[in-house]
Image 1 (cartoon, rainbow, N blue to C red):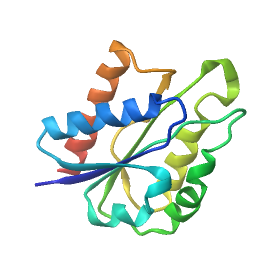
Image 2 (tube, rainbow, N blue to C red):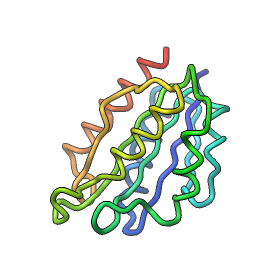
Image 3 (cartoon, rainbow, N blue to C red):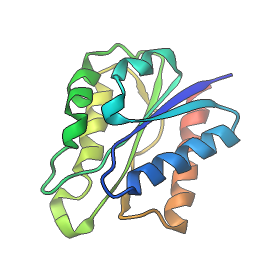
Image 4 (cartoon, one colour):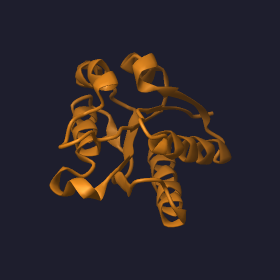
Length: 148
């Protein structure tokens, strides 16, 4: 059975919702999955799973989650060859060009690990709605397919 770990950072609860949606769909597809908050997680957890997913928020004008800086800085040092990754996060379009930059930054950090990108990143404005949930389900399905 394939395994996955979903890590999220949240202030408003929106990214925890995103992580919950992803985790639930992974479970529906028969994946053994765990979910943790970023400040309580070491990126080395990804070494023990097949699928690695991060759900970060972007703070203010493009800043990464403060509580996730150690995680972010340590992530590119891992060797995740043979793993599949994805990044999905909630942000606020109010910040215009800074909208959801943390998603792009985590995607770039994952790319340095040797892991394979399983799906295009998903960016959600504020809390996930019905269309966002459908997009997250497609995101999960693409990652699971890529991991086979």
